[in-house]
Length: 120
Image 1 (cartoon, rainbow, N blue to C red):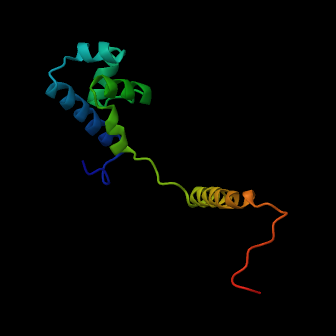
Image 2 (tube, rainbow, N blue to C red; image 1 turned 180 degrees about the vertical axis):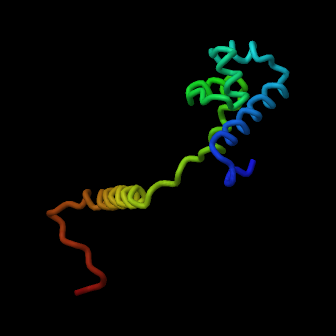
């Protein structure tokens, strides 16, 4: 559905048509889906016809009942990490690397002479 030129009501109606088509393709009646989703048939009717906004919690319940809840990832994918978060992660990783490399030198005894190449 190309939504750029549609008003909000037309988008709501288009989504409702998709919900209805999905329900019918799964051979589920309105009463069965409403019961499974824990909503009233009237709410489902409003959703499928785009006649009223039914609330996001009801949409989630219907998606779950249709086995389509994972489709939300396509609807609104998770944003990539912000640049500030990436910098913090890199700093934490650098600190971890410094600690790991610094721990190798802890076993030196202070009463020994430092090691040198060749004869001096």
